[in-house]
Image (cartoon, rainbow over all chains, first blue to last red; front, top):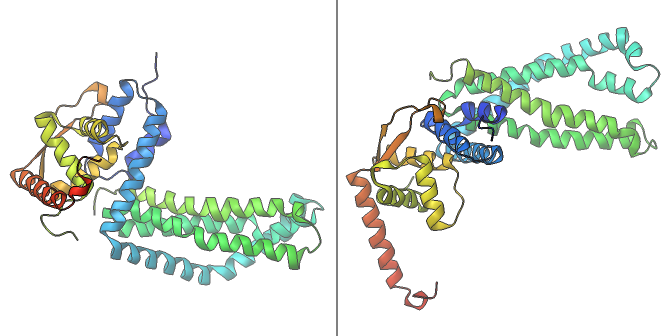
Length: 217
Length: 110
């Protein structure tokens, strides 16, 4: 017998990112089609298509609000960076001197990674990104999915440049002559955090608003 | 912002599907109707987004059906064009007919 339960992640995304108007009926329609023999891949494609069309329609209809949301989000990130920067630097250095050598042993590359991209720093950064995503979403609840997705997507632009710049620095100034093979962990680390984790943190923070009271506004 | 009396291409397809389907039109049937007649794949979500826009323009009205277990306890929303919606469809048809008359060289070749 064919499984007619919707895939969990897709159903979760649909409940949060589909337009509020008509969402219940849309969820019911997709459920009905799944029950009548459509595949889970069909369901996933429908959810993805719905989210993309909804985001595009939302942004096209509210361009000024989108610009405002981006301005608020990026200003908040900049201010937090200026305020928290010295504290983060101090925290990661302290933690490095206590635990760094025990964690990374004699590996020079990993030691350097810990100094420059220590886990406590990333943890604090994740919380900051979640907080900013939550704030931006909270201020734009009527247009929540589109604006939060676009804001988190804009993080990819500076993150890509930062990743490329870090690779250039590693290759030319910090560890010249070590070869690209030595940098694969640094690259993986940067991609993981800057291009995946931070935008995801903004999304999670924003979607948390949808879950904890997005119906108001 | 579009001027009154100007329907988008997809809006016109949805409205025509509503006219063809009558009182039983809901998301899945509308999507199937457009797919069958246009040959293009249409996501049900985009149908609802367009219907919401048409409803805000006063071109479509809706009513809720009864929830069923097959639909996970969710009710169907049935849609139908309003009098204003039908006027817009007729106006779009007249506009298209006039424009087609201006390009006779393409008549019968498509």
